[in-house]
Structures are given as C-alpha cells and as structure tokens.
Image (cartoon, rainbow, N blue to C red):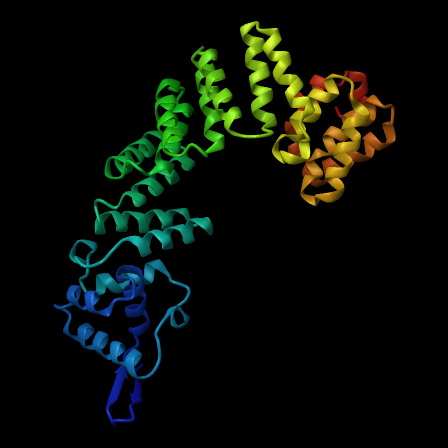
Length: 357
C-alpha cells in the first residue's frame, strides 16, 4: 500500500507501507534523528529515499511519532532490519538508550525473554553500554542464574564504576551463594556511592553477622541510625545484636528508644514496634495505635495479625477470631508466613482460641 500526499507546491510524496517501521527505527535507535539514520542506511537506496520523503513530510505536513506505530513489536523490528541486511554492528550512528527503555517495557509486562533479546541486541550495538549489562545481569539473577548474573554485572561496573544498582545486585548474588565476604565487598561500595540506600545497610549488617563479625554489624547500623530518625527496624536490630554480644545494657537502651518512637512516623516498623510492646504486656497501647493506623490506611490491613494477638491477650476472643478470619480471606499465605510471630507471642491454647492452627 502506498499513501500519496500532494503538497501545495504540487509536489507528490509517496509514503510506503514500511514507513511506520522506519519511524520506529528512527526513534528507537537514533533519538528521532533522520540525518544520522540515513548515514547507516546509505546502501539501501529505496530506504534512504523513503527516509528523505518522511523527513519532508514532517517538515511540510505533520510530525511523525509513536501515535502511528504504538505498540512496538520487537520481532517485527528485527525482521525489518534483517530483511534490509541491517545488523547492530552496522548501525554506527545509533545509540542503545531506546532499546534499554524498550527492554524495560517488556520486562514490566513480564515478557522477560523478549526483554533479554532486546538487551542482547543493545550489547551488540554498543559493546560498552553498561546499563544493558546491568539489566541483563539482573534478569539472570531473578531467574536463578547466579553465575551468569555475576558475569554481566561485573562487566557493567567495569564499564561504568558508578552504576550503583550493579553493586547492589552483585551483593545479592554473592549473598545467595553464601559468599558473604564478597557480598560485603560490593554492598560496602554501594553505600559509599549511595549512602541513602537504606535497605543495603540492613543487608550489610546481616552479612557481617553471618561471618561472625557482630561488632561490625553494629557499627553499620549505628551509623545508619545516627543519620536517620525513627528507624524502628534499626533500633530493633541493634538491640538484638547487643543481646548476642551479651551487652544487656545496650540492648535495653535501644529497646527503650524503640518503644518511645511514634510508630506512625515509621510505617515499615509498626509490626516490630508492636511486637516489642506485646512482649512487655502493653496490649491496650498496641490496640489503640494499630486500630488507628488501620482506620486511616486501607493498605495496613496486614497489621490485623498484631491486633489479633493483642485481642487474645485482652481476652477479646471473638474480635481476635474475626481478625484472623479476615486475614485468611485476604491473604492466607501472608498469615501462614507469620507462624513464627504467633509462636513467639501466643501459647498453643491461645492460638487455638483465635483459630490459628
């Protein structure tokens, strides 16, 4: 099919059926630049002529953008390029940024194999494009190919030592292999480059604990705690670590600090805050705070498990049973995963009373 546009000058522009694919290639590989694209298609006379036509069409008639081609189907793009003998190695004026974004889109749709194919193409296009190696390594890690992931992630930081996500993923990879010293090495580099990456401090502390260096784990978390406010999780971990060292004084100090925090200022730590208060017998306080949080935040329904424990302790058995039933209906597996929480705080008889078996 050919579309013909007649300009006011009387000139006729013929737009071929493959025009949308040319616009895709321009946007994906050349950031919308027809001129650079033409340089890589010089041997394809018909395509160069069509590129010139489309460029003139944009100048005289209308802009050509994603409206005319969305969504991008990667297999169609590859078939088009192969049909015209274009390889990533021959696209000397192209960049890989658009391919990276397209791979992200496919990964978000859980089309992982296609995302990986796009990233492979990007690495052929630009052998020094570090983000493609990082993303490819991350996908391999998620698939369980730890050794493969390490290879690509290491390559990414060889190319770009500031690629923070790669240090994070390498730490995770080595941690999963049980190589905690290597995990520590990469996570230390990560927090040096990105001191605001909160989660990494906890992973570092855990890795140091795994290798028996509790003092270093404490140092990491005390540094983090000093630079942040109201981190219930950090205070709890510090209390537990000092207990392991046999320093009950410091353990109680951090536990006391934790108990004084307003848990609504640290939503991620409410469950831990409640657990400590439940151990101390402060059941009414837990009920008051958690009921208010759940009332104001529909996303906090999982905290019903905390209320269930408090209700049992206050002999409000029917309330506890209703809460457990709601949790079973909403998210049975979350409740199942909290077995240790209930085992720690309730007797077998109390668990039976509220319907936990």
